[in-house]
Amino acid sequence: MVDARITVNGKVTPISPAAPHTTVLDFLRDRGITGSKEGCAEGECGACSIMVARPGVAEKTDWVAINACLVPVAALDGQEIVTAEGLATLDGSGTPTELHPVQQEMAVRGGSQCGYCTPGFICSMASEYYRPNRCAGKAAASAETESHDAESHDHEHGPNGFDLHSLSGNLCRCTGYRPIRDAAYALGAPEADDPFAQRREQDAPAPVATDYSQDGRTFRRPETLAEAVRLLRDRPDAILVAGSTDWGVEVNIRSRRADYAIGIDRLPELRELTVADDHILIGAAVPLTEIERRLDGSVPLLAQLFPQFASRLIRNNATFGGNLGTGSPIGDSPPALLALGASVVLASADGEREVELADYFTGYRQSVRRADELIRAVRIPLPLSRVTAFHKIAKRRFDDISSVAVAFALDIEDGVVTKARIGLGGVAATPIRARDTEEALVGKAWSTETVEAAAAVLASEGTPMNDHRASSEYRAAMLGQSLKKLYAQTTEAVLS
Image 1 (cartoon, rainbow, N blue to C red):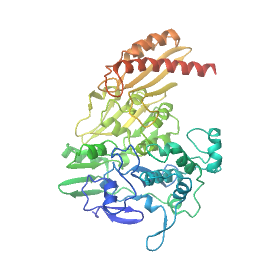
Image 2 (image 1 turned 120 degrees about the horizontal axis):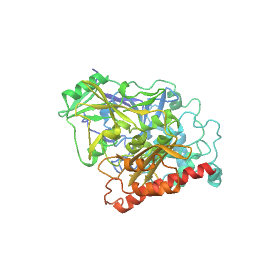
Image 3 (image 1 turned 90 degrees about the horizontal axis):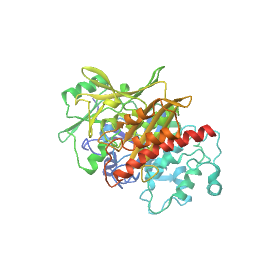
Image 4 (image 1 turned 90 degrees about the vertical axis):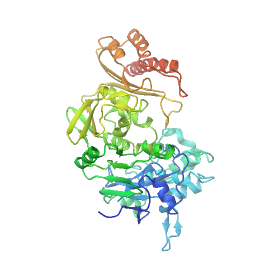
């Protein structure tokens, strides 16, 4: 097996002697590549953003921005990354001679002041700059035109097709976001000879088998699911690493270390996404951004969930498997998946079993998953309910932890509720189904009277707690209001 190595800005760089838990950010900075910064060490500020070459959805390769502060460098063995330093055109001695278009626009539009956050913004912006078909059918507008005509497009997309959600998770404390937005909206399409645009036409680096040890700790990347579950059987204490958006925080903030870590993010068996006649199967290691783009709105409830799930930087790495594996009662995906009637496929060396998600959670951060099992996939039954909604109550509209999350999936025939599934998060020790409310709706007319009565039931579901995010009374009130909001939205849709 070859030594672990990573391609950084076109140069192959050995990972040794970094410890297996060393983050990509620390790895880079230890080697003098200091553009990426540490602001929060939790994936919330974006100062550490870098670009990774990954198998594409519409092209052979996509440039994907991720938080370098969360991912262990061993997990990128054999992969290719680009930092803000690597975007500029360099001469033979490595001296920058020409700014990248993103860097140029950030400079001339006044998008940088102290500069601490700028490299992260640039990598996130460059990732969106190279998104395939971003400029399809759209003419790039000047920042001057955009600043006077922003409302003629929409609040989250520029006239050049730039999606502002791509900058979600990148924070700036001094410049202000208008000039950063102006820089993003001034970008045209990449030139035909742009090397990063051309790179999209070549295959992304394939996953490589990794067995990397330093200082008594090991990171293993198996080649197959069968090998992964054998490793897990032999080392049930192992930490499973996929997107690392949760484990990375544990490493940085709580100084947790794993004697043995198993990388499962690139296992082919965990990266399936198939749509059959009676179900949708989503691999546990498919990043949320990829799910969003591949489903392309065909599951409306998930389409509502994704923009409200953390930030684009997090969604580029986070997975359903990780969100369910942590067992957190405030994870955003469990309420939506509960409403969709999803089940979880668990794999071990003894075989596979499928568990209804409603039966999966057993206590605070506990589940029926055994220590020798991993989540292989999530299965969503078809057909989907016709009336769906995801309501996230939080202090901020985007990129925040929910106080309460409510997901609805209803079937209404001739004005009568024939089927109801409601998933709740943040109101109990585990994500739960609002079964009493479902019973209060099914067989009843979809009317003001029914909704008022069911809303009172919903307000009493779970055991909401008081904490710094919300009081128990507020959480209960928001549960009831969510059903009333859904009713108002469906009534407005019918009237319109």
